[in-house]
Amino acid sequence: MSGLFGIIAKKGIIDEPLKPVLRKIFLEMRKHDRYADIAEFGNATVLVSNLHRSDHSRNKGQYSVFIEGDLFSALPPGKLNVGAGISAGHINDNDLLSDILELKGEQLVHHIKGQYNVICRNNSDESYFVFNDILGIKPLYLWENNQFWLLSSELKYLRYLPFFETDIDRISLIEFFLFNFPLAERTFFLKVKLIRPGSILRFKGDRMEINTYFDHMSLFQDNLLSKNESLELLNSVFSEVVNSYLPRNDKFAISLTGGFDGRTILSVIRNPENLLTYTFGTHESSDIKVARQISEVLNLMHHTFYIDDHYYRESFFDCSEELVWRSDSLATFVRSHYIHAFRELERKCDVVLSGNGGSELFRVIYKGGAVVSPMFIELLMNSTDLRHTLVTHINDSLALRLIKGFTPAVREELIESVRTELDPYIFSVRKNRGMNLFLLQETIRKYFGIEMKIESFHALNRSPYIDKDFLIAINKTPFSSAYQSTLTRNPILRMKGQYLYSYVMERNHPLLARMKTNRGYSPHDVYSIWRNFRILIPYINKFLMKKENAFNTFMSAELFYSRHLNDPQTDNPFMNRALLTDMFRSQLWKGHLSDFAKAVSWSLWYHRLMGNQS
Image (tube, rainbow, N blue to C red; front, side):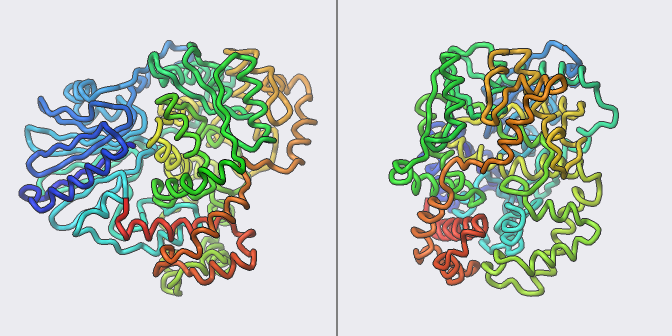
């Protein structure tokens, strides 16, 4: 488990009656992680735990530092030159971070990268500054009253406080259905703010200010590198980032499927002695077949997680309920198999390298789904009349009938809120850059970040594709989706990312480049597409075939709904359980799987949170 909780008194010191509550939160952290610290500094108490890290804080010198997450030293901007020799190191203890802090002060935010929340106390003037990473992968929640500021990586930690206000934000709940997550700074609690990525918060006395230290728009360039320069740069940076992520002398795992993301990571590994590959799916899954073939040819340790009847009998409910609880219901049972895999992986290794976010950085988006909301696509395409598009969708939406109290006044508040929250992405920049900006500021942290967060309770998930240095590098090149036609079905444009993957494999591991993917063609075929058309027939065949599911979605839904829809514990003042039950019995839910999953999952999470069960 990885978690952070801090309480800072605006005046005086932390009241003595609060100490048992803080101790309870600390013991909750210790249930899941033997490495947890609690420290008191006059007007503040900080609790932090971090998977497999024995040193979280340093209380000496000018600064005291508390880390939640995974930190690395960032590459100096001048190093991002074509063919430059690059090295990046893991910051594995607070003494090292404190030393950087002594030298750089608050400027240290520009010298580190990773997935983290950090609390720093200046012991000389008793001030604090708190910052998160540029993608906000680790959630950082803020709540305040006239006495305290509360900072937490978990909503459930806030719920322990006797003075915490639990009023639900109905707009955030509606946005959850429309966009897959509440937008901008909204959370399910009215007075709790989710801090934006790349932010720095300063506290002194009874004053607080929040600023951003990283401008995501600055990533976008008008003068891009040539194709050859781009390939050389990205190959160099990606290789260095991947190898800097590997633990020293310890086993690590790579998520390997039948596609390109994991295979590209595998191709640049310099020392595969401690490497384990894994995949999951049904027995007939092409992902499993391709991954097993690769592992056998390369003589790698491989683990397969079958999503079969045994999984549904023995693990499904437990995994899905953990997923809903850990994710604050932002992930539903559809991703429960990730918990299943990571529970096993933590027995074998501490670090997993995954392809999270990779395809989205390269691929031209042409339709909405689990990652990019169909509603966001619709608004992006019809931005000239956003109100009409929203009203039409709201009037036709079965999902919003599931939410109690959706009055005309709430609808107007929602429309105004969405207009304000989406302005930077829909109205302020070109569509392709707006989509990419939304990916960087919202989707990565609220879709992939949530997944990585829940997995980190078991093992660290590191994705080299969303590494700060790789993001800076890719946006210097035409391979970034920021510079492509966003909403198109053109297969040639969609293969641009595959071309980069293929180039990296050709350069680093030609054997991997020539082994077929689950799409029926090899990376080498993509790399040589301009010289032959061997890729087109398998591509067309794959396009025409029915898409494979990693597991039986309808079976999972049937089991999950049957267990929880009739449970009085899922009843609450916000969801229409009677309508949910009627739609489930009439089979209408099968056409609205995502909405029903959200409704039941949120209800389950709400009851458990309000009951303060851990």
